[in-house]
Image (cartoon, rainbow, N blue to C red):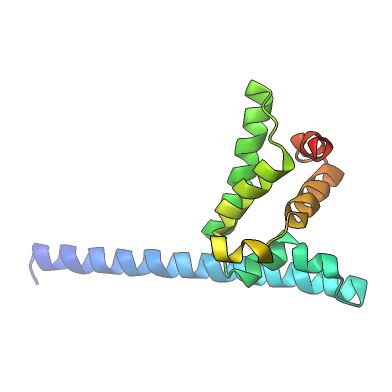
Length: 141
């Protein structure tokens, strides 16, 4: 086996390891989502209609990968950064539109993803105090 073949074999193995790492990350992400939803169901002893608007439930429904789920956090950080640096506060419709874009919601699916999803997400983050602009967005609606 010469150096060129060895190099190609190593590159192929590295690509395979990278692909498997990504797959494991995505599977772990989905398991975490499902665990969270299961805990909510157990705690509530029933499925509340609000659970269907929960961002975790939507991520499971849309079959989002771990990287796609991370995009939700990046979107929130972007909105927060614009608020902190420029004082820019989107209204609820603008926020919801941005969230739908991040979730990959198509025009045909828009009716399945009502604005209550964004309201619930903002209320959740406002309640835990991790997203100060949430209160501002909710007050503009």
